[in-house]
Amino acid sequence: MFKRSGLLRILVAITACTAAIQLPGQQSLFPVDFSADQFVYESAHPDQVLNIGKVYVGKGRMRQEMQIPRGPHVVYLIDPAGGHLWELMPESKTVVDMGEMFRKMGEAMGASQQSMATLKPTDPSHPCADSKYVTCQKVGAETINGRSTEKWEFTSSALRKQSKSYQWIDPHLYIAVKHADDSGVKELRNIHEGPQPDSLFEIPADYRRMTSPSKQ
Image (tube, rainbow, N blue to C red):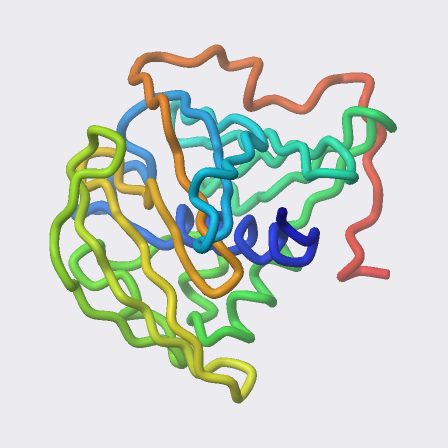
């Protein structure tokens, strides 16, 4: 199945993707509240699907719960308006604000400082417009797990290495419900629209705040 490094590449990619689409008129980043299951699989083995967690979106915020095989249980809270990306470790009850590290990663990949300053997205009609090293083109429309999507091909020349990936963007949810590259495929399935509890997007009071690796 997946190597941990491959899984992490997909998880980073989908996180960057969900923070890379902006609604017209500066509306909320995530206009529709919903919950979904996250699945990953290798392109050559689509029958070997692994459920690695859940995604929740509520009031413009996102929560990703992930259990990487042979790895820790990790929860990410994304708050685009506040420019925060919190990493929660339930086993140790610790939390780190990874927003600065995420912004530095984005800038290294060619995103502008302005867009990464508050995890803001780019134009949904041209999702790579704000990236220096990434070009993209719409290549069609497909139905993914019952959702109507627009398929985009991305070509990245970051880190002096050219690579291609594909994203299937749901124009209603304004996120990619599927992402595919050389390391594998990640999908959101069992999407259910509706309000989500505020407690899902809050840091528990008994969690200890740790210093971000970018500040050490």
